[in-house]
Length: 117
Image (cartoon, rainbow, N blue to C red; front, side, top):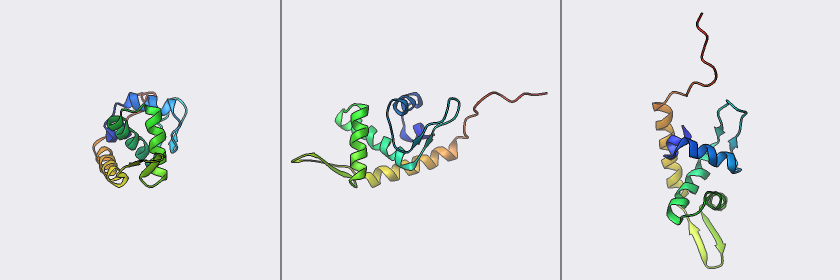
């Protein structure tokens, strides 16, 4: 559902979450779906925007996204350089997409199929 709202490949998202520490992503054991907090979804959304716009690596964009979100949409990585992101616009877009995704897709079945007797 989160990958659908972010408009990214679910396998790519799975790899990003497995290889990076993202605050708000609750990792379960094998066979259990991951849980994403709204803050985690927003962090990944900002990071994907940064990757597309600035051609940053995943790790760099996640780090920068965290800094931008902690500083209310504006981050100064060096003197004379300020990055400003319209976080509220991204947040509204993600909220609408998540609502759409929840309404249009039932949760996938997990685990073993039921036994018919």
